[in-house]
Image (cartoon, rainbow, N blue to C red):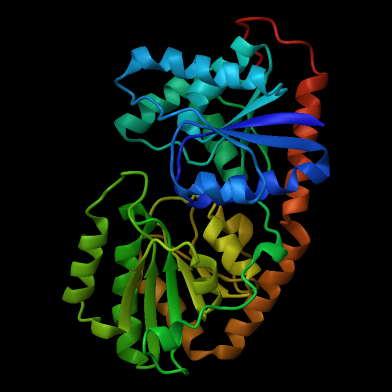
Length: 383
Ligand code: GLC
């Protein structure tokens, strides 16, 4: 069995963490033995362990300005790779990419970089991306063609595209009893927004569209599921709650915060909305909603058009145009038959094209390729 050490830098579960958990659970069947080394702490690590995935805690990752501690972190990862006899170190996300490749070089093993975010244009992101492009690695993986193209054009990085997958057996067996819990009518049509609360994930557009739809459809109800994560934009939840008040949404919208049972809540929604204002790198929520047979509306920028066939397996709407989103919502809220048709087609598509098994097999294939290529020479960049 090939052993792969995943370098993980966040302790709370969001999209990238769900992908890691799914991949790690399915790698053994593809002949790969995963272990996670964490430069962070948090409940997600225990969740990995509960699924039988070994975790080694290496303490917190240094902050960007603590550059002198970076060498220690690299050494800690390299020594974990040696101790566990890993053949490949795979960094999960951009920040871990700064350590993973260097640690692998030091340990004399192969390295892969698993990208989860699009190259952004702000100063901090740009600095990280430039450092990342200059960091050693033997392969980089992006989950969507859109992301692969962005990294190639902006940073000259070559990537393999491996889309995320879902294991239907890991989906919640039954929906959460959402309407009863929130005191809503059993016949309420529930529309959910699932994302970590950051401005670009489009919570404000969701609420604006909700206010419009709510006026026309008294039976429509809205839930916002997600919290401020990774220490980013901590004021976003308050900002959204105020906006909901100003829009007069009242009891028609509920903010449920970050929820570990997000998928059971999603299964209870009639419509799932993913309305990021910037291009979405992948959109795990879109894939999850489709796998649950929900009718989904997603922004038409970034990867969602690779996932949704507009009008057949979901609807696409122009990002940052709440009026267009409201029109799509109006269509779905008023047409249960269309919701069912989209949901059924979406579920069939996921079961055919985006399974966790296929995702794990593609990664296993990539590791084989890395391990059969010419041996690593110290310091050389095999890009
Ligand atoms: C990040 C991206 C999201 C993607 C997830 C998994 O959270 O913002 O689009 O689905 O990583 O790759």
